[in-house]
Length: 414
Image 1 (spheres, rainbow, N blue to C red):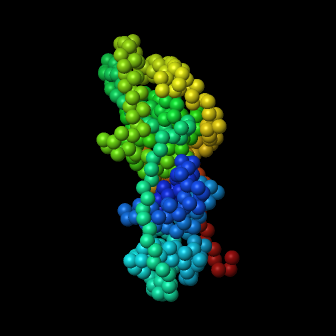
Image 2 (tube, one colour):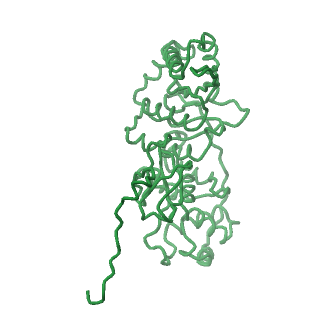
């Protein structure tokens, strides 16, 4: 199984337990009730099909995440890899659950699901073993119904942050050229407090990440990020980021009224107030314009809001300090690293965006997983135990003077 496949499985597992991890599930009487409901609803697997897992399996994922974070959900190689094993209790329970709730599933279909979700490897267990176990079961067939997840208006801060971008004014820089600028913002749904905002020449994922990172560093992590389906927001890197933070990503369907209406309304207010009063001729750099925008945002956050019963967004946000779950600087830096895979050349070199980097010779001719800061200031190899090892730019001149170890041949009498 490739690293990409194992991460797809880990993201699938996280998507099942995310409401519980983020704290957004409050409609169930207990965790056990949540596990049963999640089991009945199923989840979209990496192959695009809907899979159903036993409640105890989902509970195991939940416990693993609480102990080791997102990386604990990544399927790992077995210590007894290459050796046959019997149906253990967990596999028996998975098979029994699938056959009980989906009586039309064949042994072949159940075997494929166990293989696809990482429970078994083809060499571990044969399809005939699964078939023999199914023949031994004498269970009464049950039926289940899928339940839709309902969305609720959340009353507390840091439950939902809504994010979006908007075109700002055209800025004429010192070189005489006009540039379109983009404003990316995050608003807290309950307080209308702008938790993150910045202005850029490009509307892309890297700039969105910088706004998110700054907001999380100042105000803690939200339980849910709410975005539209734009390419800047909907990608695998965003899913990995949310999983590492312990948050949920929710994407709005087109042409439907959603919580995103608050950020859209704020952008309209910003344009009516800030942009309408702006004399763009007074600004010649992005930093100058940024400073003016930040002053406006501070004024907005401290002004009484009509929907907050006489409070300002800032007063409302800080009225619930217990809801601010700040992360350490180390956690934030680690969680906001991007991730890619690369194949190492025979001379221990990898290429990222046409730039060459050198890695340890033990990785030569292997496919490795890398994590890196959005600005490429730091790049790390993810070791097999999850630790991060930094790498550096290729320096051919320096390498020309590196002393190589020589292999000494000896005679038989030495």
